[in-house]
Amino acid sequence: MAHKEQIKFFFVIPGILWVLIFTIFPLLYSLRLSFFQARLGQDQTFIGMGNFQGAFSDYRFWNSLSITVFFVVVSVSLTVLLGLGLALLFNRPRRGLRFFRSSFVLPIFTAPIALGYLGLTIFHEDVGAVNVALRMLGVVNPPGWFHQVWAARLAITLVDVWQWTSFCFLVLLAGLQNLPEELYEAAQLDTSSGWGIFRHITLPLLAPVLFTVTILRLVETLKVLDIPFSMTSGGPGAATQTYSFYVYLVGLRNFNAGYASALAYILLLIMLFISSFFFNRLRAIYD
Image (cartoon, rainbow, N blue to C red; front, top):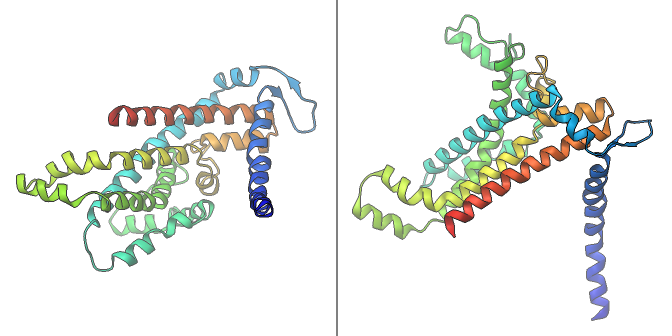
């Protein structure tokens, strides 16, 4: 028995070491760096909360944060709403449903940076599929997707929505298929209103799944980097420079590891606050 117990620990140790080396240690070391003026090739100097104070007086911090907030609001809203609509549409026996599920899930497993380069092709000003289609529809001057501020932001948002709508669809469809049929049968005896059934039965029962999908999408979208990096490189100017993009520039382009660590921890605190708010709301509703 003692030998078997030792073997169990032998198989667990690699996972523990992985977490310690690649998760816990970087997390603690970056926390230490956030209190230091630390640049590559220079001595580290303790400055206390100086990096955090500097962030709140940095206009590029506020610019990247505002761009990220816009991106989060639009992308999360569209992915959740489109995913819910598709889940409701396919929450019934349909021919080819299995094939549709399998094909619809493919964008989730595509590398975001590859999707960014694909978006670069699709939204190309001269030969991109989007502008070609717009010209066929009679639009004389289609937008320059990578030269106009809001057009560039919209293009990045649409690529992200295309990738993550399928995730919301699959999770919400699974939630819908686990709802008890008896409630719908009883409700159909009282009313024929599909909207009433959705509002008073489907939506309340599906709320925990909706909360979960929304918080997962919020966290994922707050730290988006790959798509704006590959599609626009943060341009035009800094119009699509998301928060994580700015942290990347500060840390890996300017080699200011201390300030980049402070920015990363500010984002972590924002995520923790949002997650706590959502879970507290959910607990208040169901307790």
